[in-house]
Amino acid sequence: MGISEEIRNKFKGLTSEERSRPATLLKRVQAEYGYVPEDALEVIAGLTGLPLSQIKGVATFYASFSLRPRGTHVIQICQGTACHVKGAKRLKERLESLLNTETGQTTEDGIITLEEVRCIGCCNRAPVVVVDGRTKGRINIRELEPLIRDLRD
Amino acid sequence: MAKTISIDMREFEFDAGETVLSVAKRNGIFIPTLCYHEALKPYGACRLCLVEVLEGDKPGLHASCLLSAKQGLVVLTVSDLVLKVRGVLIQLLLKRYPKEKSLMDIAKACGIEDSISTLTGEHQEKACLLCGRCVRACEEMGRSVIGFVSRGSERAVDAPIGSHKECLGCRACENVCPTGVVRFSLHDGVIKNDLWDITVDMAVCPICGRSFATVPLIDKVKTELEALSEAISMCPACRRAELLKRICV
Ligand code: FES
Ligand code: FES
Image (cartoon, rainbow over all chains, first blue to last red; front, top):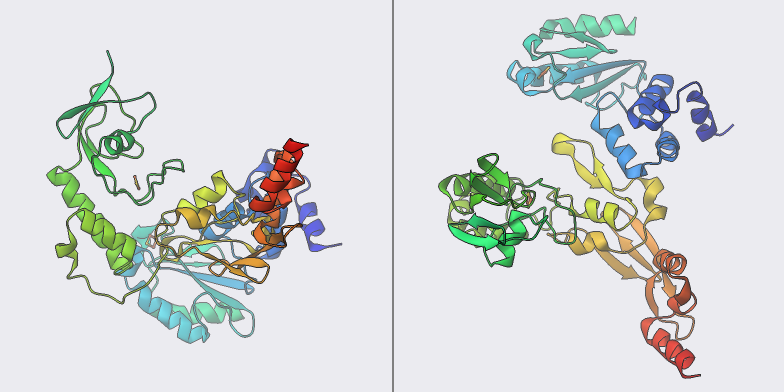
């Protein structure tokens, strides 16, 4: 079974209305594979009847979709305005050095992916990191090391 | 009685569905534009075409490329507010794309080149200003091969690999680009666009062997204009000769 066929199968069980919404389909693919393979974009373009360029536009607009495979765990560090004011840049640099990887990349052991996001909508808790979809606010730079250790265990 | 709007204290007639920008242009009143192109639907992204509405449904600043002319509308194209906001917009654009020629031309046309001469930066030739003209041209006239990707400072115009084969090579995108960053060049039997890495095959005239249009473009015309079908694969000169022959027999 080809990958396109396999992806199409993942959409079985969706209503025809759901199947016409690119973001719904992208979300399903992201949940199933942990990223959105290039082929999925074409499958979704075919199903929704929208141009591939627009599907790619949606897929690259939202930080919750990734076009590259991610590690087992994903740390997203907010670099929005409020978090920036609260020192998010230093946190990011610290994470990069702790993980020995650049933002947007996955650690060599394939376990942790570090990404940056722009304002996730809880600025009152700045600076914010999102670990595997869970938001952690008012992060202190000293909390980063134990956080990573926990993920690795 | 014909309907009129007032632009800069003068009354002008307008046609149904016309925008303020179009009335102004038609009457020789200058309003700077960037994302607007007469062949495309207005988009309202750059805001350089701002005018100040004094009397109308919503007084304040409006993008004239989107503002419909309505009986009794009173607008100014050069009020203090317009000049101030427009000046900032041009400066912001120039800050990001230093010395980009199309922007410098706009600044000159607006008479603000002095205030921008202090802006420094690397001379960057032919930048993409994200005006979206090419994206809209491709959507309206081509096949939506290109689109915006990412957002914020990463935003760009790109063509997903899978859509390259859809490109007609019509070059509408190149035609509407204000900076010239979108370009196709002719190589051995193909045209190439380096920005998006798209290559389209050129067709060859079956009579004289001249290469004159792309294969997918000819295919498209063929399917849409059946009567012309075989003659369309010939270059314009041979096509004329062929059609003339047909008429004369
Ligand atoms: S800026 Fe980080 S949550 Fe808003
Ligand atoms: S020309 Fe009207 S907003 Fe760009």
